Amino acid sequence: MRRNEPVITDTVPGILAMLGALAFILPSASAAIVMLTLPTHYRAEWEIPLTLIIQQVLMIALSLWHLRGNLEAAWADFGVTARWPLRQIKIGVLAGFGMLVINATGIILSQALAATIFGVQKAQLLFTSEQGRVMGLFQVEKPLPVLLILVISVGILAPLAEELFFRAYLYNVFKQRIGAHALWVSSLLFTVVHWYLIHALSVFMLGLVLAWVYERSKSLWPAVIAHGTMNMLVAIAILSY
Image 1 (cartoon, rainbow, N blue to C red):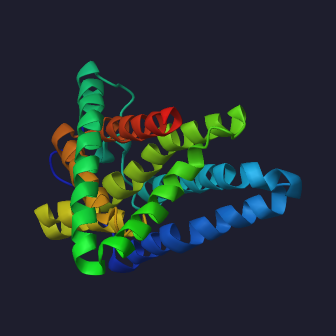
Image 2 (image 1 turned 90 degrees about the horizontal axis):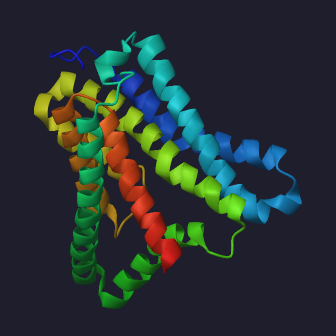
């Protein structure tokens, strides 16, 4: 378990640099690596999944490098331990199923709000466009190896990368600076970097749940498991559609 008192601190320039790297440098670097190394005839099928994988690996590396190297945080300080107690696994799985319901509720509320602001037709177009970004990843006609890479990406690497950055790093740093408000601020930034409009409310609500699970369990693993469980359920639902 982590210590009772937060021990992870960072400067404002450090926080801004990490957010800038996440939002701009990592996506650009990942895309550049794929463009420079992937043969042209493979790009139609492999460009997106490989870019996602590389971006998530870089995100994990960046978070650990900053936490362990620059901030000199111990593994236990941000909730990473070698043991996964059964209770933590249960919490993560149950939270993942609960997040699926929260996600659906958030989408319904967001659609209603968007229809009020933009009109029904514009809101529907925005919703369809955002849904297409996710649905398009798991087209059944994609080759099986591509689908497996995408499942690994959304079910394992993305949850680990995002929980390391937004909960292990960002939530702890903001908790040291602004106390309980870190829950809202870290979740808001979690929402912003996903670049959604219609789905923004649901992403924000999911960020709140993940931060709450992380804080209550004093471990990163339940949040990672919850995040991965929800992502996998969404992927299965899309593939079964």
